[in-house]
Amino acid sequence: MSFERVTFQCHDIEIKGKVYRPEVLDDCKGIVIFTHGLGYCDRQYEIDGDQFAAKGYILFVYNLRGHAGTSGEWTLNAAIADLSAIIDFLTHHYVFPNNLRICAMGHSTGALITLFAAAKDPRIRLVSAVTVVTRLRDSYLHWFESGFNIESQDFFKAKGVLDPKIKEFLDQLEPYEQFEKKQLDLSTLEIPHRYGLLKSKSWSKFFHEIVFTESIIEHADELKIPVLLFRGESDEVMDVKKTNELYDKLKGRLLCKLFVTGSLNHFHNDRWGLIQQETLRFFDEHCGYSDSSNEAEKHILIIDDDPLVTRSLQILLQKSGFEHVHICNDGETALKSMLEFKEKMGRCFNLVISDIRMPGIDGVETIRRAKKIVAERNEAASPVIFITGYEGDAGKERASEVGYMDYFYKPLDLNKFVESVRRHLGCIKKS
Image (cartoon, rainbow, N blue to C red; front, side, top):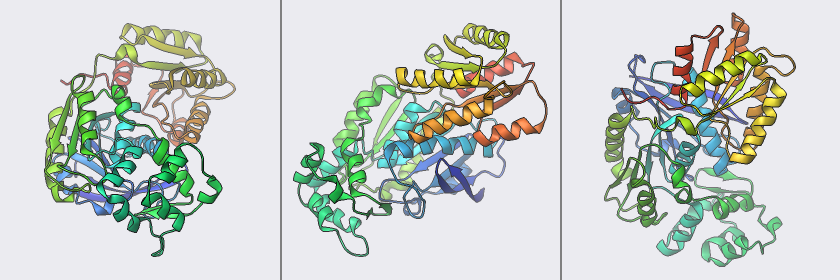
């Protein structure tokens, strides 16, 4: 087994993470990414990275933006977009046959981030979610039932002092109700504070996330992959019945398992060995899983200044089962098409295939601008395959700056090209 630290740029922040991996990557089963909860950091979990490595997985652990020395302002959508960017980095940094088999694991709000990311990013193939905060608002309201609203006040102290305005929110529900109805003067809530290991410049923005972010239960139908859920017997942070409700939404439609650990607390470190053991068993059992029935639901955009190329690839992919193959013959039209698709569908293309050299805005610049737009909106960008008729390292180096999933030289090996498209869209059945 091997251990190393990595640092890389992720949107507007720098991510520092720890990687546990097998010495030899060729037989590695996939990559596991662990996302911690809202008030915590990666150091607070008893994760045995060596065990993941011994079982044949790369494990990556990191701190969310705003936490424990990581810069940036935390929001749910920013954290979801960061997770997809982390996948970009890991799949390019660690190259082996199964490096696109992404298994995502999260605890608490980290589980919520993981599940939303899995609904948006087809590269995530498996999820293990521990004591899921299914919605931040539901968690906050549960504090007042469990009494955690009093206990949590220590987590909100900055330099040993709890701001009186924040204390009002933790003593009674009336400020929450006024905030939800937009009856409060938000300028009085521009208070820097901390919640455990999360630092925030504005209580107003932080509480907006609590009140108005979405519920994964309401988006459960967007999940298409195997999900393993853990909950305890009781939980001071989140009503365990919400995990049951999420499970009921998922179990009749996809491969889902609920594991009740017997733990009596939200943090769950008293059962982490069991959680890790069952997670590894679940990942091993289903690591070859892919929803191969959904080729027709995927939307692919092809960009090339040669109409013969775009039309030929469109026909090829349509014959391979992909019904929705869109084509553009220049960068400006492609950017417009991406924006129109996002407005209509509420998401980005499942995959973008782009030529490198084109008149006007070339392929690399087109992807750079597209990724900048979605990053500003804290959304996940489309994975990209580049194609080019020009040999050499210069184009590949430029393409690496914006990130890509695969890189092909023309004339294309059509079998390898279609295989790559299927692999990056998660459309390869278990062999």
